[in-house]
Image 1: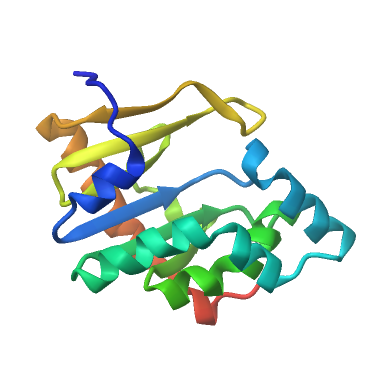
Image 2: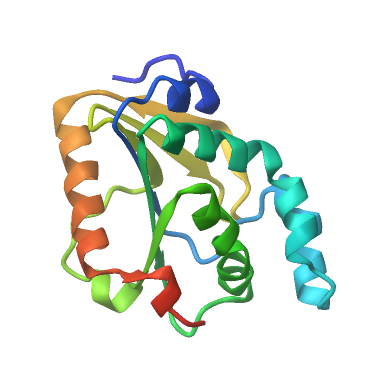
Length: 175
């Protein structure tokens, strides 16, 4: 059942043990990343500027990790990777430095894994927050939905664990 959707920072602040994020798109087109992605494509992107732009996000991650929350992110990607995935890969180390664990799974290696239809965050193995995008990768309306029913939580938890098991740690994955 769909519920009212709490703010992401509120969800993360209330997380006690784990937050797992599965991303399955080869490109996103959200306005908040447009300038950084354009700079990356032009070859003028810098990690320092990106880090400054992500300071709020990185702070949320670091705060959660300092409280003992394990944060894991897995990305399923097509190969050869898109320019957007190259952009994500270039900026991933700052997320790792904040305490996130990140792995990459080539799409061909994800065959046979039952996956939900959208990217998601799973909080403490009890609540799923789906990120809903348009075909162009921008936020859809509504942009997020949450679920707590056992079948959906189990689908997402099982999918994430299978992806995580097969995926390559960031420091070993090259684009």
